[in-house]
Each structure stands twice: as C-alpha cells, then as structure tokens.
Amino acid sequence: MEDVIYQGYGEVDSVEAGGPPAGAGCGGYVVGETVKLLKELNAFYEYDVILFDVLGDVVCGGFAAPLNYADYCLIVTDNGFDALFAANRIVASVREKSKTHPLRLAGLIGNRTAKRDLIDKYVEVCPMPVLEVLPLIEDIRVSRVKGKTVFEMAEFESSLTYICDFYLNIADQLLAHPEGVIPVELEDRKLFTLLSTYYLSGTSQSTTDQIFTNEKITSSSELDFLMV
Image (cartoon, rainbow, N blue to C red; front, side):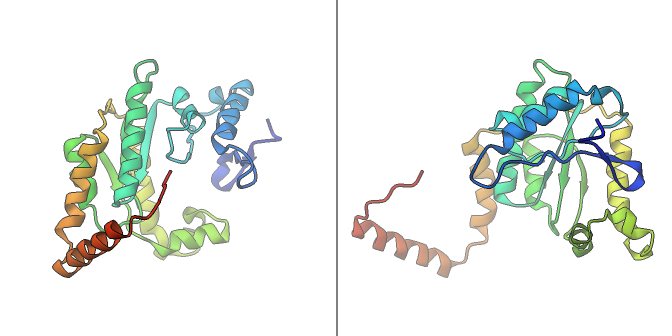
C-alpha cells in the first residue's frame, strides 16, 4: 500500500491516479483501475473519510466509478452555463446510481465565482442544498503553485484563515451525516432554455443586429461544414 499512498500535510494520506500521456489513452480507465486497486488493498476500510476528486464527466464510466463506493456526491461548479450543464449530467448519474447503491447527493458547491444567480436558478428547479459558494481567490491558485494546501500556508499567514473557513464549513456539514437527496436532472432542452434566458436577457440590441447580419452572410454562402 505504501507504494501508491503517500502522506501529506496534516497526516492526510493521498493517492495520485495519474493518467496516460495526452492523446494516448483514457483517463477514465485509469480512475476505474485506481478504484479497483484501492479495493484490493482494503483501503476503503482503513479510513474514516475518503474523498475522491474526480473530473465531472460522468458520461465516462471510469470517471463515475467512485460513485459505486460513495455515500455522498458533491458537485463543484461555477456560475457558468457549461459548468451547470456538466453538473446536471452528474445529477443524472447520481440518480441512476442511487437505484442500486446507498448514494445520495450531499449538495452543490459554487467555486471561483462572484455571482450565484445561475446556480440559484438551477437549484430552484432541481432542488439540492448549496453547501458553500467560494469567490475567486487568487491565494488558492498560489497554494497550488507552491505545492501546499491553504491550511498549511495559513499557519504562517493569518490573513488566509478566512479561506480555510469556507472549507471547514463544508467539512462540518458532511461530518454531520446529512440526509442528502436523490436528485432528478433536467432535460437538456429545458436546462438550455433556463440558462440561456439569462444570457439572452443581457444581450444588447447592437449585438443582436450583428448576429442577424452574420446569419444572412452565412446562409447565402452555402458553405459545406461538418461539426462532430
């Protein structure tokens, strides 16, 4: 086990799943194999808390593999159109997995966003708790460059303590064993309509005119075009 599990700051054990070189393999496959390896090593029974930080692409079965062993799923998203579309796909995966596993959605975490209007619109029609919303904080990116956690940096820079409070709030909610929810995702078209209304309502007349002009040019050109 010591060959793949390394101890980091605060005596927290860590595993890096890694992956193949870019364009040369499947990252989801590596995640699935990592889950299998941890199971073979009985790692799931050695810890009180295990946190999987996985890319939110649950169309891939490999990336969704940790959900087979999880009590809760946390969705981390920003306040943007594309991120909430991906979040909705994760919601669909949680609903499907909950049919055969004791999995619940603990909630959603807004990340790197000064606003939460789209997040609020989404959870209004797809009910789930919002555990926390973190603004865009440069020191979090600095911590990654330094190879340290924010908590480690805060030991020497007291001004960073407020950042730790965001994460401690999330941890307190999870350790309280929330009931969680079995969510029901929105249909893609309904979600598109919901989120696009926000963007279109902020479109100026001049921008709209330009869009119509470009459409006329494109339609008269009769271009052969394929997008996959």
